[in-house]
Each structure stands twice: as structure tokens, then as C-alpha cells.
Image (cartoon, rainbow, N blue to C red; front, side, top):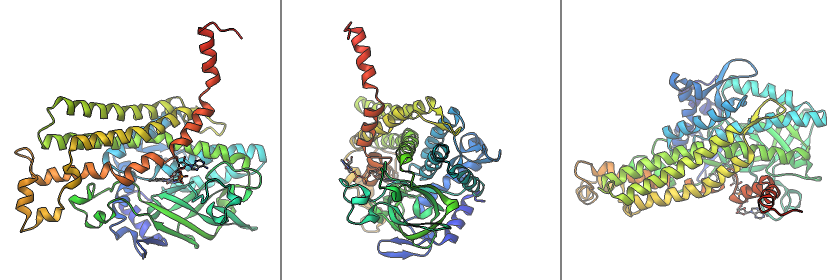
Length: 479
Ligand SMILES: Cc1cc2nc3c(=O)[nH]c(=O)nc-3n(C[C@H](O)[C@H](O)[C@H](O)COP(=O)(O)OP(=O)(O)OC[C@H]3O[C@@H](n4cnc5c(N)ncnc54)[C@H](O)[C@@H]3O)c2cc1C
């Protein structure tokens, strides 16, 4: 069982995944500078669970075994569990200032738990029992899972079976007596190079004819036929140097995403949880998306708290913190952060019990939360750039500061208020820069679904007819 950070790192070293970074194969991800921050960040989900003061948020009681387990492997048993999930994410974001990656697999587990129950009810299959057996092992081993939903999707105007290359959507290529064979890929997979297994889910609602694409299954990432290609991030090279220029050298700026490719990967039946039941793909996608969108006010709310703190420090270090417009901008940033957090808490508080017994957040409010993230984080970042000043974008390298020839010049001209070192000023400006740029922002836009996918949910769940009825009643329009 994985308990400590050391256990976690050892488990990653031992599993020997087929990982590529910048054109080369990586033998040991745990010592490669591109991955260390992501590993440190995910390791926090293990480390914090060992701290007695965080036990209430980080641990839960398994409904299967009655044992204490890491909350990231738990099936929500109450509204309280849903709220604690959000509180836990904000807590972890305060520790890392980054993505700690483990929520995606957590959400895949919960979405499948509630959905397999209903698939069995309708189709007489035995996925739920199978899934419970699988879950028991994940809880006991305390494994980290990738939530593998997004397919590459090729030509987005075409359905899976219409693509020029059928592998652009992940699919079953062969059904055997002992299991299925999978080909295709999952794109943007957060934490993939430092997880143990991937839980693949259909990427979208599937219809008749798409049966081979209606597949959910858990696959150990070191299975033969899997290749992980790590994605390039903004300021990627800075991770290699660490130090001040990396901004958040210990935990990185975002989760660390990889393209996970499956070339004829065999999956035994005990790990298959949907196989051809296209009528349940829509609800499975919706549930995973809702559970994932629920998170964003927790984790991004917490990340925003760090951006706000860093912006205030940058301002203090250059003597502007007393200015009324700066104070007002910091207050606006806090308002935006608390707004997204409020959304996550609200959709959790309005959660309900599914037939399986697992609890599910309110889908409309969860979508509203994520939709606010696609805007508020950009606005928070815009205000952070305003407050921090242009120097954030043109600051010299850390090596210039350390240089025997020009270090003194950097020290002298990058100084802010008296009593604050230039080094500290540079550190905080780099933190603002790294948390408000490139890859980190795009995650707020597209992670858990592009904005349009949330607007579609408003169309479906927004009850426009009821709203029209209320208006007619007040206006005394009788029809
Ligand atoms: C940092 C990051 C981390 C992520 N982590 C994970 C993860 O761990 N697991 C996972 O499964 N996924 C993950 N994702 C993927 C995320 O869910 C997708 O990015 C998101 O669903 C959008 O898909 P896409 O990137 O393919 O965008 P696209 O589909 O290319 O969308 C781009 C634009 O085209 C529009 N569009 C797309 N299709 C159509 C269409 N048919 N008709 C009209 N308009 C269309 C969209 O609305 C959007 O405006 C992550 C993404 C990011 C950026």
C-alpha cells in the first residue's frame, strides 16, 4: 500500500512506463527535471493524508470495507462528502499553488460507480460487482488514476466511425473470450506519467453504430502497447533549471499532461466496465463532467488565493500596496475567487443520492462553476498583471542576478522598497508570471470541457420554459 511520498515515488520508479519527453525515452520519471514538480505536487495528496490535522478532509471511511482510505479513492456517501472534496482541493491548492492531478481519476471512479449500477439494472450485465471488486483494490493500494476521457477526435464535424483514421476515437478492436483489445489514444492526460492506472471512458455520447467506441476500462499504465508522450508547457525549459526562474520550482504550474497512446492493448474482462452499451455513454460523460466541473472552485479557488497573495506581495515590494486602486483590485480578485469557490460548495450542498447510493453534485450548478472559471481566472490573471507591473514580463534571468559581472546591476536596478531584497522581489514576480500564463490559463478554459459544453448544459437544464411561466404569471398573461 502507498502511504508516504517515498512509497509513491518508489512505486513510480518500479512501474517503468514507456514515456517520451522531447523526442527521447525517459527511463526513470522520478529523477527527470521535467516531471519532478508534478510528482511533488501529486505526492501532496499522500503526504497531507498523513497529517492528523487534515485527516477529516484527506481521509474517508470506505463504504466497502469500513477502513480509512485516502479521499481520492472514495465514493461520495453524502452531501458532506461532496463538500469535503471541495474543501480538500482548496487546501491542497494552498500547499502546491498548482494542479495535484488526482481529482480526474477520482471523478472517473465516482462516475462509473453510479453508472455501472444503472447499466446492470437495464441490461442485466454485472459491471457494478466487477467495479466494486476493482475499487476495493484501488482503495487498498491507494493508487493514483488518470481520468482518461478526451479522445484526439480528429475532424470534429465527424462521428467516430466517420473519421479517416478510426483510431482518432479510442475503441475496441477485438473482443476475446478473456477480454478486449483497445486501440486509439487519450489526449491531454493530466498526471499520466506519474499515475499507476488509466480509467478510460467514452469521450462523448455515442449512438447506434458506435458500439466499439462505447468502452470504459481500467488499464495499468505499464501494460504492453501503451506509449506516453509528454506535452510541452509554457516555459518548459525553466523546470530544467529550477530556481527563481521556474516561478513555482517545487510544484510547477499545471498538472503535466501527456498523450496516452494504446496500440492493441489487451484488457481482461474484470477491468472492463462498459462495452457497447451506447445508451449509457451520454449519462456517463455528463456525470464525469459534472463531478469534474464541481472541483474547479476548490482547486482554482485555492490557486487564485496564491495569485492574490503573490500580487499583494509584488505590490508591497514596490511600494504600491497602500494605493486605493491596488487595494480595490486585490478585493476584486478575492471576490472572483470566492465566487468560484461558492459555486463548488453550492453544487455540492445541492447534491443528491443516485440509485447506487453514491452522491452526485447538482449538474447545473457544477457547470455554472466551471463556466465562471473560464472567465474569472482570466480576470484574476489580468488584475495580477496590472498590479505586478511590466517588470514581471521583462525581468532578467536568475543567472544575471548571480553573475559576478552584472549581478550588482540587477541587484541595484531591480530593487523595490528598502528592506526587501531584489532576490525576493524577483521570486514573487516569477511566481505571479508562472501562475498566470500560458498552459495554466488554458487549463482553466478547456480542462473539464470547453465553455460551449457548459452552455449546452444551460440549454438542457436551465428550465427556460419554467422561467417563461413565472414571467407570464407575474405579467398576468393567461394562455
Ligand atoms: C491542461 C489540460 C488538462 C486536461 N486534463 C485532462 C484529463 O486529465 N483527462 C481528460 O480526459 N481530458 C483532459 N483535458 C481535456 C479537456 O477536457 C479538453 O481540452 C476539452 O474537453 C476540450 O477538448 P479539445 O481540447 O479537444 O478541444 P476542441 O474539441 O478542439 O475544442 C476547441 C473549440 O472547438 C469547439 N468545438 C469542438 N468540437 C466541435 C463541434 N463538433 N462543433 C462545434 N464546435 C466544436 C469547442 O467548443 C471549442 O470552442 C485537459 C485539457 C487541458 C487543456
